[in-house]
Length: 462
Image (cartoon, rainbow, N blue to C red; front, top):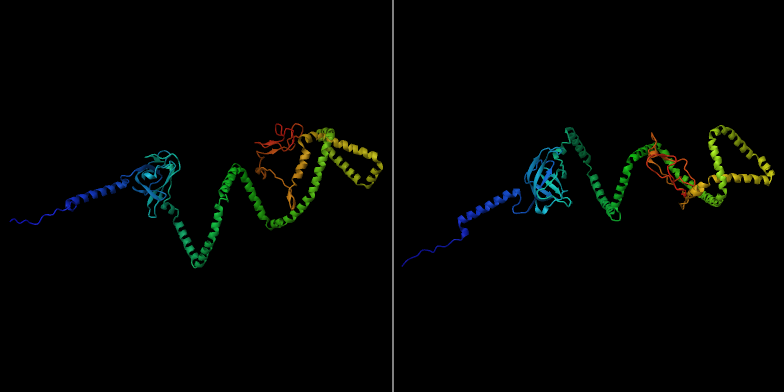
């Protein structure tokens, strides 16, 4: 009889020490490969590689983070120093590997090397642009798209030893000022807290669509843009305004006293204009009634024109006649004031008075004859009277108002050392059957003094 020992049992493969050792070595090798290759980007992932030129790569190292909006999207793989080349200053070029989802970047993307913490770490911040043209794989973002970074050392270097000592004294003084005033600070904080809701209401009104704050800002920008071409002319105006305000300040209490007198003066002016309005209406009616007589009085006006032309030719001789004429007119005035004159004229009878009236009519006819062409074609007198009525035609419950809009050249409102290059003056405008210059000269470049060339108004009347 044969006796057998216990039956041998087979162990599983994973319990084999040799197989387990091999697996551990394979896993360790894979981990080492991943950790090594991760320094140059994550393995087995699609990436977007670009180059970025920056003014300064100080304290940047390999594998520095690249962020967009604070989120990490890649890393720096290499840093290359570039020496000065012509007008291009020395700088650094970064080889950057980004996640595929971060690209492609627009050509107007900007880059900045920013401080990550007060300990000195840094990272590269990208601000993607909006351009349709994008940076290709391996392309370079130019140096012009990178911003300079202010280092903490540079910021602190602003304070020299004297400045630091002064800053320390200021901080110490602020500490003394705050000490013992906790209640006041709390009250200030409480007041600020109660003010914030009102401030929020104000900001809400400003941001409301009905406020149209954007349109206001655009209008202000358009106004300043329109004022830019005349900035040189506005400078003297502002300086003259400063002198004027200085003079008003020097006036002291007298200016306030003058302002207090404005209301009584305004009321008196309103009463005067109210009484003046009927007179102006009568003047308009009289001028309208005289208009049909213009055709009859035209020959007399032309005769008066010839007399005036003759008088102008004799102008040098009139100077010596001024004093005798003045004595003659003084005698006429005294004669007219004498009561005996009125009684003597009463004794002359109606025939002589008719003669006097006829002479006066002929004289008026000669005057109107001279001005007939100007009145017929340009309506000088009637337009002037109509405009005189217009300046008092508006008003309110307080009465009528005088209105006008003066047009001035800013450089001519203050004393100047030489005539303005844009000076326009026409003291004797032509008003006849050919043209009506008055008010129709226009404003052109350069300096125009006297009658402008060409025909103005075309003789059709204003």
